[in-house]
Image 1 (tube, one colour):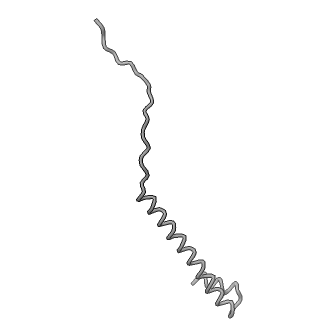
Image 2 (cartoon, rainbow, N blue to C red):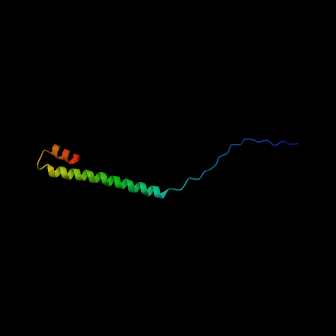
Image 3 (tube, rainbow, N blue to C red):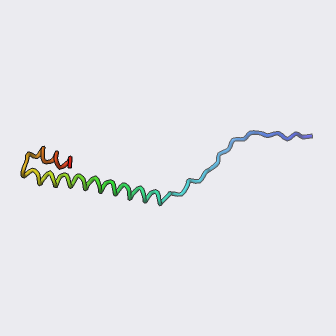
Length: 69
């Protein structure tokens, strides 16, 4: 009589790639745009205030004060 025995066999399994999470992608893009806009606004404001203060004091002091405020 024949005996049943397990024979290990290696094989490849193709796992499908998960679909792109569009909510996360859009949220990441909005957050990045917000951060870039904020940084640009801070830099622009510092330059504007520094430019206004240079009429009264040395530019190093003017831009230093604008950056600190």
